[in-house]
Every structure is written in C-alpha cells, then in structure tokens.
Image (tube, rainbow, N blue to C red; front, side):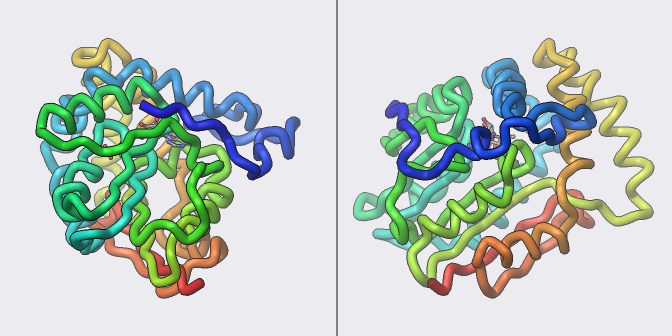
Length: 261
Ligand SMILES: C[S@@+](CC[C@H](N)C(=O)[O-])C[C@H]1O[C@@H](n2cnc3c(N)ncnc32)[C@H](O)[C@@H]1O
C-alpha cells in the first residue's frame, strides 16, 4: 500500500488554524476533525461491510450499482475512487476498465484500505491502493476519466477544497460521481430520524461494539448539505452539466458533474 505524501497543494488546516467545523452535532477545531473521523473508521473497519448490509437492509448495494451504471466505465479508462474504503466501487470499476485500464482505490484511512485491498486480492483483482487525503490528491491534473466518492464527502473537513481537487484531476470531458446520504422526503423524515437515532447506535453497539461512531453517522448525515446545495457546490468547484438523482426518496443522492476544462 503506498502511503502518499501531500504534494504542492497548501494544507487547508494550516490555512485557518483557529477555524471550527462540525463533527456530527459537535463543534470542533477544523484541525481536529480529520483525526476524529479517522478514529471512527479505524474503529469500524473490520465490521464496516457487515454493518452496511444490516443498516441499509442491503440497499447500499443498489445505490452503488446505480452509481456504477452512471459511471459507464469502459475498457482502458483511468478511474480514481476516493474515500474508497473497503473497495465496492473500485472492484466494479476494475472489472469494467479491464487490464488496459487503471483504477485506484484510495482513502485517508489505512485500516479501511487494508480491508478493501484484501477483499480485492481475494477476488483476484490487483489495483493500486494509496492512502491519501481527498483535499490534497497526489495525482496529476487532468489524469482521470472518472472520479468517484461514495459516502465519503460528508466526512471531509473542507468539502469545497476536496471537490476542487476532484475536478482538477479529471480529464476534460471526465465525470465526477458523488454518492452520499442526502435529504429524505419530508413525510418520511420522522420515521427515518427515529430509526437513525435509536436503531443505528444500538446496532453499532451490538455488531461493531461502537455506539458513538454510528451516532456520528446519523448526526453527520443531518449536517451534510442537501441536494440543491451540494449541486451548487459542484458548480462552484468548476464542474458543468451538474445533475443529481434522488434514491429512496432522497435518503441518498447521486450527484454528477463533468469537467469541461
Ligand atoms: C462511510 S466510508 C465509505 C467507504 C466506501 N466508499 C463505501 O461506500 O463503502 C467513508 C470513508 O471516507 C474516508 N474519508 C474520510 N475523510 C477522508 C478524506 N479527507 N480523504 C479521503 N478519505 C476520507 C474514511 O476513511 C472512510 O473510509
């Protein structure tokens, strides 16, 4: 696993040392958020896949299948999966890009990546794996045909910086795909809130021995920008033809944008 070091981009945490942000419902120093997020994913890595299936009733597989379809990865393409964790998207992209393609599985968290790398190897897929922060991608400008991030953006300290980096590494004509929890339709919100703040932490405690991380999950979803706000953020990052698809009544949304250069 290559442990990449930051390139020439400025460190956003250094840029505003006194600034605060949210970690779930907690207000924390910007400089402290990444470490807190890291703690969450180090803690849940070994049970992450099982928890995903249990929490979503297997629906995360359908949301990812939709994303894979929209990505339309073809043989020979170069694809970057950011915050790729245990490798669901990278695995599907590697099969589609084939031996002439180049698919990178990357994440800031080496515990998650280790699980992902081992899963891919077990399935006979060897893809390059790199520990890196989405806010400082160690890849050349205009390199990838597709960049994806599934359920990762929500955890990033400077989403605007990360989105700009994602656009930077896309080729002209390349597509960004952002799959993330979003704002569910209003009539369903009370039931969803009850599930999120009662069942999720309970399940987290029973299965992963970690209630706090799954409470953070529920809180971080509420703090994440809604569909229209995120679409505007993609545009601000320089992406064009921005659109989004609501999945399961907006519980999750897939945002897309194209780098027109
Ligand atoms: C909920 S998991 C998603 C994993 C995988 N994409 C999936 O859909 O199953 C979120 C991932 O985002 C990663 N992450 C959080 N902040 C990050 C950052 N700044 N740069 C890269 N990855 C980050 C975490 O380490 C974690 O593996």
